[in-house]
Image (cartoon, rainbow, N blue to C red):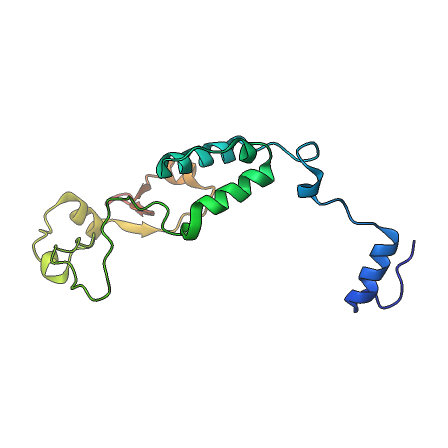
Amino acid sequence: MKPPPGYATSGSICRAFLDQHAPRKADPEMAGASGSRPASPAQLLFAEKLAREQGIVVPDAARASSAAMSAWIESSQGTQRGRGRRMSITTPSRSIASPKSTAPKSRSRKPAAHDAAAITPSTPARENARTDTPLRIPYGNKDDALKLGARYRAGQWYAPPGVI
């Protein structure tokens, strides 16, 4: 069957053609439990978790179908959907007007400039880093590089002193 001219540029022409030649399927909510899928195990687990958190019971009507379970989950979640679900109940909420916490901030993993002087250059890793020769080993040549004495450390290939 050939579609009418203009179907690609006009939604009304396309819809009229489809209504005439391809009738719409029945609405799954109207079909009842006989034509719908049962609730998935993941839906059941999530619904049980929500019910436990709120101190309620999942109704049998919601367990009847996947669509009913989805609707019950959405109504039970309220405005929390999509963000903030993992926060604990005991976490106090901070208002905009409240002052910032006086607790010390977590430290960065990288040492600050003044802390770098405290690291002595006599550590073996630092000495090796100064005497090792960096190498560029193409992917797939690992075995050959190892046979020739190259080593891999800290995300980079290098030649220890005396190998080159």
